[in-house]
Length: 128
Image (cartoon, rainbow, N blue to C red; front, side, top):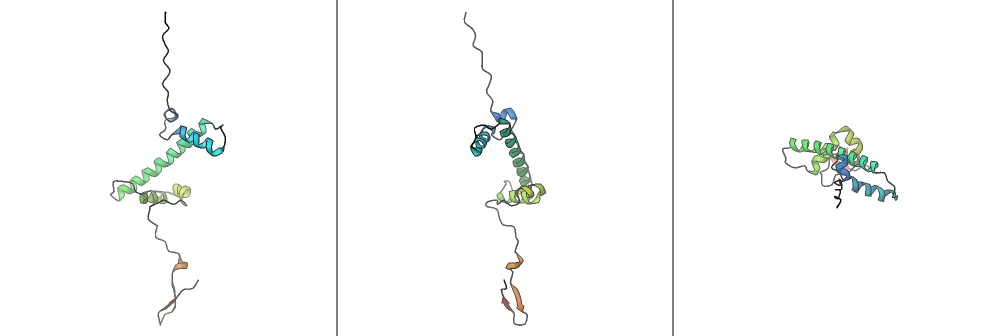
């Protein structure tokens, strides 16, 4: 009699096991490459993937609200910048980052403004 072959259990990706959308296996490879070690725990990759997914979800939700407020149908880099600047916690975390292709917030330093020295003649001089 021939024995019936046992079916192997279906393989699932690390992201599916953890219930995440971000790629756990790819992040695990990045962690191994960045530390120069082959020994990196899978749990750390799941933690980093979950943290990144949580941050990106929050930023995209706030940027979507900003786009909806401007009556636009797509999220632009400007909306990402508005979302980061208007949220206190995200501003602490990402306040010093540069969002490419977003417009600059209007701010002129007082040192760059011209100072008038003679009010009658209207002469303007730069004092540095």
